[in-house]
Length: 77
Length: 147
Image (cartoon, rainbow over all chains, first blue to last red; front, side):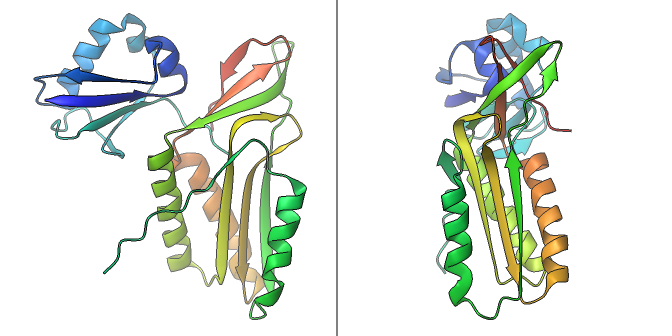
């Protein structure tokens, strides 16, 4: 399955990009996260939440979305 | 049934006092309103380990944030007796002393606007995927965290 992953704030500093498309066979968010942790070693030291199709999800959620986003702590306003 | 597309609340750069003044002016035709309440978020020049914050650069997961603002709006109308409400948030660089958030609520009576404004601003801080990079005077930076 081809998915788009978006990175924001200090997470984008770690990945050095704002988004990328990856081909994955992961069935759950946690598996996708394992792959990303492999690719970006600094990621495990960072605090972030995950959104699937623009809704926050837990890592044990099934990977079903076309768009995943890694969101660091919010600091609007 | 039509699905309402969330409005875009983002403005590039700081929110000017002209823009805010004009928003107030535009409500003079809505004569059922008896009370407005306004929150203005201003970039604060924090002193962190001897370095001063010169500006905050805002980015956002815009689609999700606009949906979040839309949900906050719906919840506020449900909870409080409001005639109208507006939210504007900056993107990009906003210097210390400039306005980065403008929330404007209106109601026939004052009690609703006091309560609604606090609810809305707290919800924005907690739930909107907006990210602020605090840029120091020496051009180094750190990421702001709301608490």
